[in-house]
Amino acid sequence: MAEELNTFEIAKKQIDAAAKKLKLDSGLTELLKTPARMMTLAIPVKMRNGKIHVFTGYRCQYNDFRGPTKGGIRYHPDITEDEIKALASWMTWKCAVLNLPYGGAMGGVSCNPKEMNNAELEALTRRYAYILREHVGPRKDIPDPDVYTDEQTMAWFMDTYSVMESEYKPGVITGKPIGLGGSLGREEAVGRGCVILIREAAMALGLDLTKSTAAVQGAGKAGSVAGRILEELGVTVIAISDSKGGIYNPNGLKIKDVIRHKYSKSNKNKSVKGFPGSKPVTNEKLMEMKCDILVPAALANSITKSNARKIKAKIIAEVASGPTTPDADDIIYKKNKAFLIPDILANAGGVTVSYFEWIQNISGHNWTEDYVLDELERYMVSAFNDVYEIHKRSKVNMRTAAYMLAMERVSEAFKTRGLWP
Image (tube, rainbow, N blue to C red; front, side):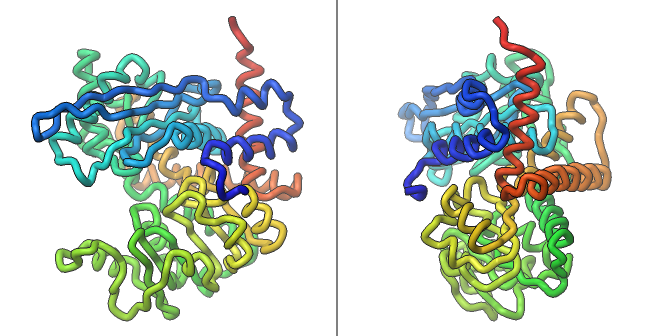
């Protein structure tokens, strides 16, 4: 059953589908399905009770044929090795689709940051950076934030690495505070990049955004930004949810007000639930409601063959990583006739602006926010057009088209560089 596959098995199935279309050599296909390096780390930290707790950390450097590896660091109690491998694989193809000079990586620590204080998180981050110091660097592997990590986490990592190198090295990591070499425009990059692609897809399909409705599963940074910018384009956002539930209003929700409600001091649940003028809706029902645009911005495997037929959206834009299983892909493309923008394209705005941050760091030059956003627009539109052309020419869904483009670029780099020793 596709729903029962772990994330790395799904990632490998997606590679197989594109490799078949590209008629890649079986040995090369196997190479593209195999991580170059997978590190499992023991990270001892003295906790506030005075006892030492050993956390398990990971870093997967999946593929470096096109350049230094790039990928996030996530802190989560349910992290698995296969999840890290899958995310590193997706980062490889994401960078290649956007034509960034990077390979893919991913890292993380199995921990519950909600139960840790600031001092413990700092100690964990610095120890993680210390253990990885020989394996990361501006020309080796460049991490960035992911689930439950932020610009403060990146600042601690960068400082630790710089102290060990006896030299200020802001380019070792991206997603930093602006004052430490971070880039303007990074905060909203994922959501903004996704909306750029939705706009391009709507133009290709002849869909009038000012007469369209949208539902967003996930009210985090990416989902809330995507919802707000969709509103700015004239889309009526009728539903949004978080891990505790969702809200619905057929006349539209003001996303700025919804997010203000979620984080207000009086809202102890820190949820969108209870927003004035809205009706409650479950995450499951949100996915199936009648709307023109669906934005899965929360969970992996949220679209499976059991609910794919119930989805009514014309455009699905995957802000989350791995929200759709392979079986569901076939249903959405062949049965629903929906236009799905895959995660390795839809959520690539973040790594694109991370690339801009890295360029600024290694060149010692700061870009204006307008320049960053103009460049983001240029990269996202170019990538959409490249994938859309393959989609039309090869008569494949957009996910397979994106993988075909990415794998062709990575394979070409491998063939040109050669196998040595």
